[in-house]
Amino acid sequence: MLAPDMNDRPDDTVPGRAVLAAADVHIHTCCSDGAASPNEVARVLAASSLAVAAVTDHDTVGGALRVREALAGRGPEIVIGCEVSSADGHVLALFVERDVPVGRSARETVELIHERGGLAVAVHPYFPVHSVGDLAARLPFDAIEVANGTPLGEMANRLARRRLAHLGRAALGGSDAHLLREIGHVRTLFPGRTAADLRSAIERAETRAAFDWRAHVAAAPFRLAREAWRTLPWARTARSALAET
Ligand SMILES: [Zn+2]
Ligand SMILES: [Zn+2]
Image (tube, rainbow, N blue to C red):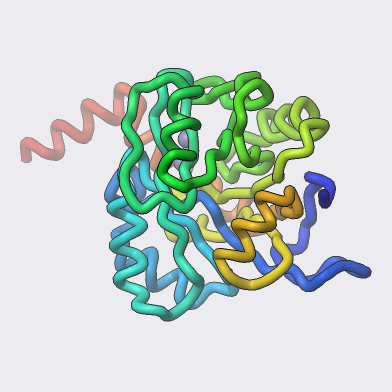
């Protein structure tokens, strides 16, 4: 396998190796908690250099289906997916055309994804919340997200690489974009060009994660401000006051 290390170049070739294409395997739309509509995400993807993009809203493949429809064959090839809320934390389902039941154990969730013909990914396994932790090593995940673009997630990313690199599973990078400007700033590099190539690269553990640090740093303040507005108590009070006016 290619080492699950980091590459500052967003995508291109690795000297002495096959030409690699880039995929962003973790993108949200407003079909769950993303800020942008599927049409807006499609517009940004169409102008991007990504060869493949997986749209993975929380607990629904609806966002991915709408982005694929909006692109109508333009831009990157779309992988249908969702980020499943298992009882043990978030589990990413790639290459599934229908929803995966929520609230089951991580083990059962991985089985359900496999039954649907999909690939199961342990995403942000060492984030303090919504994460499967060491189950990433014990369950038959097809891949580990060793680079997640959530601001302040660097320590958890490092932990994932250190604890899980020895497993020999595919190493993925996903932006976890909730804003348009975040799309593609963390990528998975793979040999080939198509979604089928990405799938077989994951199955052969021949992927690697790549971080575009400039885009990451540029997007972080916007993402943090949005998360604060959505979650902090004072912001919740301000939002309800605004809603009443
Ligand atoms: Zn998540
Ligand atoms: Zn996510």
